Every structure is written in structure tokens, then in C-alpha cells.
Image 1 (spheres, rainbow, N blue to C red):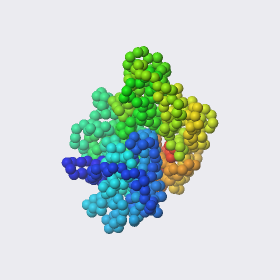
Image 2: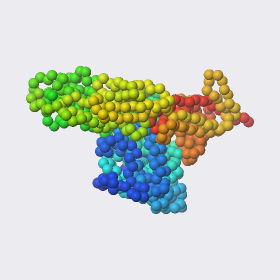
Image 3: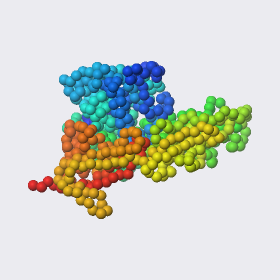
Length: 636
């Protein structure tokens, strides 16, 4: 749910899964030194994921409230779960290398937060004053979880290099009660079943400018007919599919694609708090139902938004003055986990042949004629997540650096200092078998840039012809079920880096309540027969550290993150013929999902296919398991 501002007073909107709090505009304070953020009682700034300097990254700053010093490990576990769920969702999975994550530990004098779960419950002494009921307001609702924004801003300012323009603050309350808020900030209860899904939804609002796809304003009340004209929202429209194609507007480029969140990209009625008269791209997605992925339309917006927070060019050879014809021009780029960036070199407007995406270019090899020449390196992101040419050409996905090259500039002596690594994929945790791993090096002003040599389990591995900084492990087709040792070495140097490659996905299992009967047939998945509600528990095991995300889908619909049951993370998922109403949202209808009470409740008495899979902390997606469930009408 997003925050709408009218004049100077924010309007609070209360809806499903993600709720809003008024956010005060507090001037950013000067960042404190990291040492000043340390607290002998267990507080301080802890880098959860450090991908580069804070000034050059998008920073997620996670605060904790209501966690005593003894409960700081619980806060750390809640942060890890929230982040691993985020990394299981695209485009965060592919662009997690653009994002730093910081946990600000603020030990509390008392455990828990205010008015949890009721207005009559204790007011606790906590550093950020988080509270349910919109700050213990009898006129609010229980699940509206607020935070003292001035205190939270001061805590976030302990992270050096972060400011409002390059960070997203997420405040976690030490609670198992469902609650959250969003807009410019996000809050969530740390230990609730659904709370880890609030963060990507709220980031969709605050970072991507995405709108809610709910077809209601208040829970349990249909939203009626949309009253306005064509929405500005990228994922809402009044146009038909034919009109979208004819006018080349909205999501016309994605029409007919199989949706990441289930079904196909098309035109589905309801959204922006209206039941009728406005349409969205997919049946359900992150902005409509917590648990599903962003669909392609939302993913494209989020890809652009994440990329706009950083620069594809992180550094480059100086270009304030002309380069001599004996120099080496170079660029250092970002390194998406999901695929390497492209680099194209042009001299006087013509592509330089034979560079093959190299991050450096020795000018002496061009045999330049006298006079000044223009050299340009263009860094671009070839991601398939983007189809809009304007977005692809924008600074978020395309950056260029230009030099003037002049042979009359005096030559420089050959360099003598040794090469070294200047940046690389983190080595502390295993990398996934489909990740892009990178290693950047120092550069020479005149000689060739150092070469990086890669080995896997001691055997040489070839990279692209020009770009030896990135190694795409997905192209190696590593056999599953084991770990590997990856090594990068600077040619002619002792400088080396070593990673563990986790090519063994987590294993998943399921446990069902007792069926009426079990049917086993050769060549078919096992079939369980029920004549009423049943439960399903998903479990996962991994040989590496980190939270494993389990997912399931029914009849080939979108993959849905398993979190237990909305009211209890430890309880199994409950399937029923028509679904279960929990606080005016519907969960667990077997077959076509229901989200709200007015969705079709007709039981689907037939055989259904249920698949389940895992996504481990390294990003490995396990193979899907499958079983059948036949739902029969109850006997008279």
C-alpha cells in the first residue's frame, strides 16, 4: 500500500498485506563514523551484505525495535529471513549485487513493542517507539505498525554514506502479530508469517512507484467502479488488448507472455482499489497478493528503478584532458548476478572491431592518425527483463564515457607497479551455480590491463573473448549435488581470490494430513484423495548456512512463497474447497485461488497438481517435486 499526500497532511490508507504510516520529512543528519555506531550492549551497525561503497550502491537499512540485548540473535535471524525472501524474487535476485544491506542493532530495555496485540497491552520502553494500532490510536487498526520517524532516521544515519536518496529503511518490530506499513518507509513485524513479504511489496511502492492492484479500499468491502480516466500507473489501464497493441501503449510488448506470477500477461479487471472499470496485467502478482512474484510489467519497472539508483560505470580512465595515443582507456562496471553488462568501444563514431566487450582498450593498437579523435565506451545492460527501448536507452541501463585522444600528447613511461584486485564478488559465502562472479583489477595508464585467469576445481575456465572480469557460472552447466572451488588469479602475479560454488540446491519435502486414501500408479506422481480440508507442510534442508525459501504452485499457476499459515508461521498451509477467510482475505482455496471474499468460491472437485521447490541462500533453485490431490465432494 502506498502513501498518498494531499497538501501538507498525509492520508493513511489501510488495505491488504501492506499498510501505511505517516512519514515525517526529517532532514538527513551527517553520517556518523562507524565506530560511533558501536554500543557495548550489543548495538551498532552490522553489514549484512556489502557489495561496494555505500555512496555507489542502493542501501537497504534494516532497523530493529523491541529486541533486547539477549534477543539480538533473533533480530539477526529475522533480518536474514527477510533478505533471503527478497533475494528469491526477481529482479532483486539478479541485481542483489547492486544492493548493500545494513542491520542497525538498537538493543531495547524491554522486549516487544507498544499495544501488541491490543490497545490495552503494555507500552514498552523501546528505542524506536514502534507500536501497533497506528501508534496506539483507538481510531486506527491493529495491523498498522508505526515507528518514531525521527528516532528511526537517527538510527539509519549511523550507516556512513547512506541518505534518503540512496537508501530504503525497513523497521522490524519484535513481534509475531501481523502488521506493517509502507510508503517512503516500510515497517513489518519481524516474526510474523507474512512479514518478510511486506518488504518487497513496499519497495515496489517506494522504489518503483508501483500502485496497489487491490480491488478494494478497506478489507471486506468491494471497491466499486473506477471513476477516473486512463491511469498514469504503468500496470493499470482502461485500454483493451487490441487498443494497447494499436497504440503501442502500456504493456503491449508483454501481452501473451506466460506471467511470472501465473497465467499469461493480458487484461484482468480490478485494481487501484476498484473492482470494475480498470484492468491490470496479470491475475495476481506481488502488488495484489503477497507471496507471488512481480509480473513482467512490474519487474521491468523495478529493474529500471534499481538500476537508476546506481551507475553502471563505477570508474574509468581520466578524461578531463586528452589521452596520448600510447595510453590505455578503461572502464570499471557494475556486475549483475544475473548476467554481465555489455561494453562497446567506438572511435570517431565507428565501432572498434575485436574488442568483444573488453573493459579496456590499448590505444597504441589503433595506429591513430594525427589530430584529435573521439573515443567512447558505452556500457549497457542487455537484460531480457526490459523491452521498452526508452528505458533501455536511459541512464539506468546505458552509460557512456568519452575521451579525446591526441597523438601529440607526450608519451608516458611504462608502468612498474604490480597489479592488484580492486573489487570482487564476496568470498565469505558460497555463490550459486548460476551466478555471475566477478573480479576487477587495477589498471595501467599505458600498458595492457592485467588479465584475470579463472580455474574451477583446478581446471582452467575460459571467459568471454574480451571480458575476463566476469565469469557466468550458468554457462558451465555444473553438475548438481556438490560444491566446487573457483579461483581467480591475476596473470603474472600472486594475487588470487577463492570462492566456494554451491551447486547443490536445498532439498525439499512435504507432509500432508491423512487422506481418505492414497493412490500409486506406475509412471504417475503419488495421488492423495480428500473429501474436505487438508494441510500441507513444506520443509527444506541445505548443506550450507542461510534461510531456505520454499515455494509451491497449484495446477501450473504462479509460484507462491510458503510461509506456514497467515496466523502462525509454525502451522502448515491449509487447503479447503472454497478457501479460508482470515481477516477478510481468503487463503488456501484448492484450484483457482481466491483473494477476497467476493472471488469465485465454487469448489473444484477434481484432480489437482501441486508442485513444490526450494531456493537456497546462494540462489540455487531446486528441481520441483510433484504430487496429485483429488478433491471429492463430501458424502451425504
